[in-house]
Length: 284
Ligand SMILES: C[S@@+](CC[C@H](N)C(=O)[O-])C[C@H]1O[C@@H](n2cnc3c(N)ncnc32)[C@H](O)[C@@H]1O
Image (cartoon, rainbow, N blue to C red; front, side, top):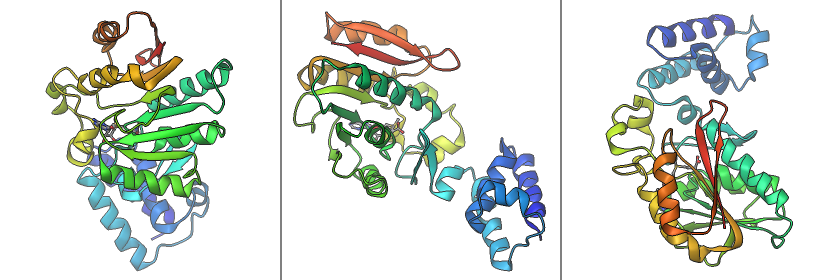
C-alpha cells in the first residue's frame, strides 16, 4: 500500500464514521507512524508502508474511531507556534486560548511602569502551554505556574524541560493562587468554565478523554473564577493585571462578580476572531 492510498483510505474511514477534517486527521496519524512531515506525505506518492506500519496505522485509526482525540494519540499539539507534549492527564490547549497569551504579551511589553523582570502567575497551567509561551516570548519574566492536579504538573514539567524554561517557570501544586509565594504583576488564568448542565452536550472526545477537573466549572461555570477573584487581591501588585479566559455569554455574570470583589478596577473584554468576548482584562 502506498502512502497516498493509505492516506485516502484512512481519511475515508474516518469521514464515514463522522470524524471531521478527516484528511488532516488521517495525515497526522500517518505522519506519526512514518515520522514524515505533511509535505513528505503528500509528495512521496509512491513510497509504500511496511506490514508493521500498516498494523500500527490500523490501531491508531481504531483508537480515533473510539473518539480518542488525535492530539492524545500522537502526543502533541501546537499552541502559539510551539509544540507541546500532551496526554490524557491534561486538557489539549485550544486555539482560542492564544488570545490570552497575546493579551498578556501585549500588557507586559506596554507596562514599562511595572518592575523588571515582570512577575507572572499562570493559574491552572495544565500542560504548561500558557506559562511556556509567555516564558519564550518574555524571556526576562519570572513565571509561577500552578495546578491542583499533580499529574498535570508532571506533563508541564516535561514541556518546561523540553523548551528549556525550568529556571524561568516555577511549577507549584495547589488550589489556584494559594501556592504563589508573593504578589505578581500579571495573573493569567484559563480555568474550567463549563457549566454542569452543559457537560453532557460536549463531544465524546472531551467527555470521555479530557480530565474533568480541567473543564467542570460547577453549577454556573464560574466556581473556580469566583474563588480566584477572592484570592486575587493579596496576590496582585499595585497597577497589576488579571486576565481570564471565559466561555461564550459568561461576561454578563462575570462583571458583577468582579465588582463584588474589587470596587476600583478597570474591566475590559477582548473578543476572539468570532466576536465572542473571550478574555476579561481587569486592571488594578
Ligand atoms: C481549562 S484547563 C486549562 C489548561 C491550560 N492552562 C490551557 O489553557 O490549555 C484548566 C486547568 O485548571 C486546573 N484546575 C482546576 N481547578 C483548579 C484549582 N482549584 N486550582 C488550580 N488548578 C485548577 C485543571 O487541573 C486544568 O489543568
